[in-house]
Image (cartoon, rainbow, N blue to C red; front, side, top):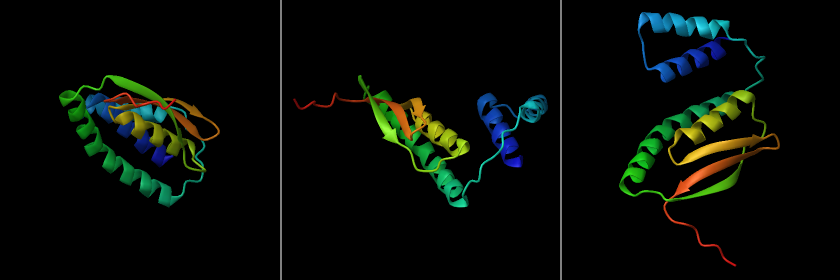
Length: 130
């Protein structure tokens, strides 16, 4: 329950970008009033790997944004990406957040059988061999 509260309040602060007393009170109130879901067993190793992926995503997002400013990306593709095995709802949310956080990618759909449908913006159209 504490983990869910911390996640919710962190997301609130990221969305609002405001640390005033009023905003903190509103964020805490909303975080406490939202229904809590039954948490599944999450391996510590998965959490540590997720934190590592978050740390790597920030510089990647800035690099991709600068690339898109300097060299416009005119083409796009939709691909299927495989998820890791045994993902809890929280880790699936983390995967979707990390993919969508970078400017060139967006998750369109998550399939229960372990696949993400991901939209990519690319510089050049890939050659299709006939």
